[in-house]
Image (cartoon, rainbow, N blue to C red; front, side, top):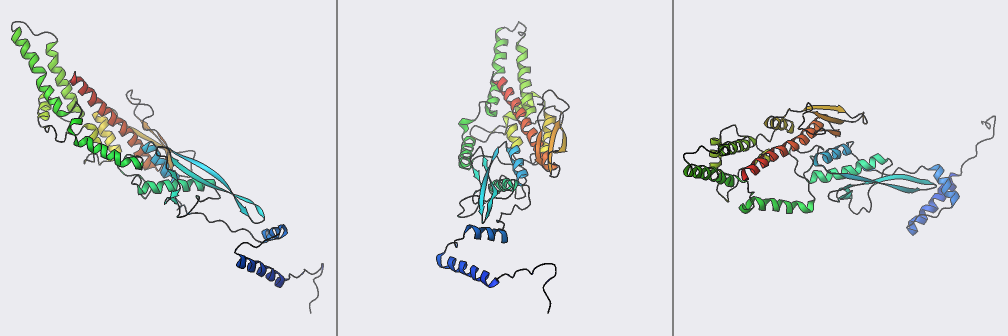
Amino acid sequence: MPGPPTGGTAAPRVDWAALKSYIARKENYEAQNGEPAPLSESEISAIAVLLRPAPLPEPDLDGRNWLGHLNHFQQVHSQKVTFTDEARQEPRLGKAPELRWACAATIESTGARFPQPGYGLGPGASRSPDFTRKQDAKQYAAKSVCEWLIDSGYMLPSGDLPKFPKPFAPPALASAAAASVLGVKRSPSTSPPGSSAAVMSRKKQVPIPSRSSSDAATPQRPSPPAQPVAAPKNATLRLALSTTSGSTTSTPTSATSSSATTPAAGAPLTASPLDAARTPTPDSDAPASKRVVELCKRLNLPPPRYDIKPDPSTPDEDIWNGRADFENHPRIPDALGTVTGSHTKAGTKERMAGDILGWLIQQVEKREREARALLDE
C-alpha cells in the first residue's frame, strides 16, 4: 500500500456528505417557506469565496453604432437629444455591490424620454436595463430612440435617413399641422397678395392708365423723365420673377403670357420656387448634392467643393467631419455646409448638401418675395 506523501502531512479530506446535507437543508427551507434560507456572515463569506456571482444579462445592441445614427438624425433635423446617466448598485452575496449603469435619452423638442414601453422597455418592466459599461448603456438609449424614429418614418431600418426626410414634429401635433396645411391649400381667401392672379391684374392695370392719361393731357410735350422708367421697371421685375421661377424666357411679353395661363380664383395656384424645390418632381428626385449645383447656377453662385475628412477623435469608427468650400464667396456664410461627427462618408456629403440646399431655397424664396414686393409698390 502506498504510504503518506513525503515532505509533509496528508491533505485533510472534505466531508462531502455533510456538505451535501447542509445544502439539502437550505434547499428544503426555501422550498417550504418560499424565501431565501437564512445565512450567517461566515456562511455568506464562505459561499462568496467558493462561488462567483453569475453575470447579469444585458440586452443585445446588434453591434451597430446607434449613437452615430442618432447623431446624423439630430444634425439633419436640427434636433437635440440629451442623455442622462444613472449609476446603480447591485447587491452581491458576500461581496461589495456591483456598479452598473443605465441611461435615458430625451428629445428636447418633444419631451419624449427613452427607453419607454415598446421601445427599449419590455412589458411590465419597472426600470430600464443596466450595463457594466456606461457606453453600452448610452448606446442602448440611442437604440431605443432610433427604433421609435424607424417606426415613425423618420429613419430607415438600416439607420440611414430617407432620401426626402419629412419634417420632424411632436406626434401629438403632427395631425393638427397636417390639417392646418390642407386648410390653407383649399381656401382661396388665404392666398398671398402676391399670387399670380393678382400680379396679372396689376400688370394689366398699372402701366396703361398712366401712359394714356399723360398722352391725352399733354400730347405736344415730351414724356416726363420718370415716365419711361416705369415700363422697364415692371419689365425688369417680370423678368426677375420669371428667372426666379426657373423660366428660360427673358422678355416681358413672355411673362405676361405666362400670367395669362394662371387658373382663376379658387383653382390651385402655380407652385412657387420654394414649393417646386420641395415637391418630389423629376428634378427634385435627384440627390441633394445635384440640386445644390442647379440652384447655385440659378443664383449665380459657385458650386461647393466638399472637403470631407475622418474625425480625429474617433479614429476607429466611421465618423467624418466636412467643410464646404465656396471659394470665399462674399454672399455665402462661412460655416454653411460644415458638419462634425457624421456617420459614413457618403452620409456626411448628403448632410452637407442638405444644409446647403436649405439655405439656397431660402435665397430663391427671398428673391421672389422682394420682386413681388416691388411690384406691389
